[in-house]
Length: 273
Length: 309
Image (cartoon, rainbow over all chains, first blue to last red):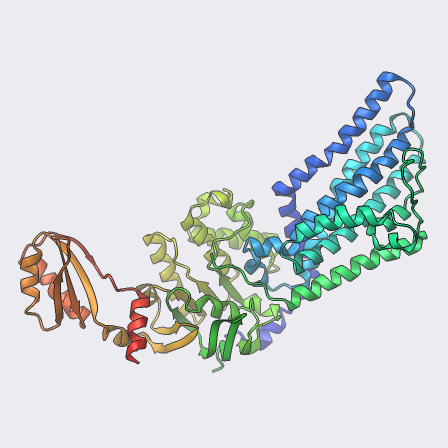
């Protein structure tokens, strides 16, 4: 008969549990319809970049440089749309899809550290979204800077931007993971937050804009010239680089920690049928 | 000997709704049948002893330890949920190997074990098909496979025979009995008495969130057999059959239904009655179309027993 002594040998460790959960969900993610759909949506900025570049080539000297268009695309498309929508759907489903799909019993009846489920699935989702966004960003970058690809310095810009977007993915994913655990309609509230709060609050003057995650992401990018956006009354008042990075990491740790604690404490009632 | 599963004054409320009330049981190695009508609290009980739900009151210990937030215990527990839910984008084989890897088996060990179990449950040929294309019976077998593949000491099966074909049922019943004989603890829930009878003699009757009776199935059978059963027979000579049965001591009532080919009999001694019926069928050369027991469902039996107690 099983005894406590033999169970001692099988103590559930946190990191092996995270590793196993991560591997499982990364594999699931690679094969899921949702990932394919978002991979397709990440092609949209590539198409836009190709159209810009194509028109430059066809109609001669451009009004804006490739780097300028690229910087604006990061702001307008990646920061304000793509990473928000992708992290919202992946993050809010970290826990919710297992509850709604009644697959949670398969996971909670395995010898896995309870909090490791959240961390492992969060990590898998973050990597999937991060890779998709980086792929799209890199292709856009290459297309828009086609004539400057020989200059070694410009790749530093790509690396910096990919890093900023990855930090953004990590932060939003943690936030939406938390929303998915506490709310049944996390997508609805996530959309309100993403396209309401995040888009409006950043244009407020003074300290108010610091209540938006996107403010810290923008602070990590060089200040954009405003010539394309003369209608803006309020300008970004950037937070120092180190403070922005620490704040974003703080958001990740805070919401991920809260999600783990809540998941371990909460019981999820699965409908029988 | 310490019980494998022990609950003390266990209660569970879903808001104001009672799920389980003051349940104290000890479950030892062997097969134990958890029997009760739909909504009786069987699944709630199983979810509590697998740590999926937190007790509102009382406590649950498995292998001598509290189960809530104690995942290391699951190295030796296999659970087959009642819900028909899967990661539909995976094949049966992928699902099973991943579930085994979540038990910290290496990829090679997981593949070996998965092949073995899938072969045993007749899923080997379809193992590479996506789960979404599986039939109900195949999905049920896959659920059982993930519960037993890691060779656990405690196996908890929530309505495992649902959706299985007769051959599959027989095979699973045989396997459950074998696991009990090997000294493992198997807890099986069902709302079908004959299914449980085929697996074990140890039974827990659960009704309206309470343990109604527990013990040897013969005792339960006696309780159930004291319940007058109605048996319906459809045949070509109902009046001849009725005339013969009215003389039998074990028959309480004989009555006809609007269907001219049907007669219903009420009896307290089901086994004696069926012996007699077999003989009469031969003697009278009856062409029997159907023999059914309209109230032979657990709810009717429970209603009767509760009224009697």
